[in-house]
Image (cartoon, rainbow, N blue to C red; front, top):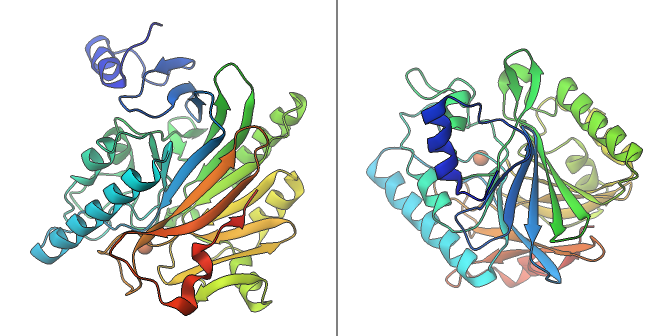
Length: 346
Ligand SMILES: [Fe+2]
């Protein structure tokens, strides 16, 4: 299929009734970022021009869309901050680790989706517990919500006939070369599946690891999931983390199953989560970095300076670092500046 914009494609799909989930579809993202190639319902490639580093901006917990005057103002502040961070750090890719929108208990407004599309950078979201699968009565279900993410990089695995798990992978490569790293994204926000990486998602992950092994692919993996694993508590308790803990680690019902699989894979270098707005640290257990994203949204709880997390990955080696970034108006207290310094994440 020749180059066409994704909007063109969606229009064509609607007009002809062709499935939008066809593999090997290449669309020219309507952005200045890398070319996005969708190779399966659960798989994308981000193809970069020749450049030394990939920059990913992780944003978290924006809780957009609550329809009252105060929250509308707060959302505007979040928009301003995110736009500024994108302009300053020029990411190739923006990853939102969930609680994007509050459709669970609000008659939510959906302006945040065009806002994200208009950033001019490919973007993804791993759904959080406020990105509710059914929504408040009368609100969009997750399937309807997903259908509105017209210009995003969000996929799904088929769980069983007609049922989707919103887990997917994004492989990063330089044009003409093989991938140097991947993101694996999980939906941990679904109360019905337990608000953790569930068994079917774990099996999906293992299937990908097996397929990669057969293809002799051993590149580093970065995981994106809204809810932290239980090891986020362990790593802080064991004083193996740098940064601040402002609240109990809300790992929900996770018992450590998925972390063991991440470790056993030998490829997962780091987990990036959100969920706990006033936890902000990086630690390491069993050679896996456990990283909190910085809360980016003023509509969520917490009184810390809002910001984001910049991840920079060497396109030759797949090795990367990460640090928290704040807006120009945001001033971190001197004693809390440790997370503003680069830490190795892969
Ligand atoms: Fe949140």
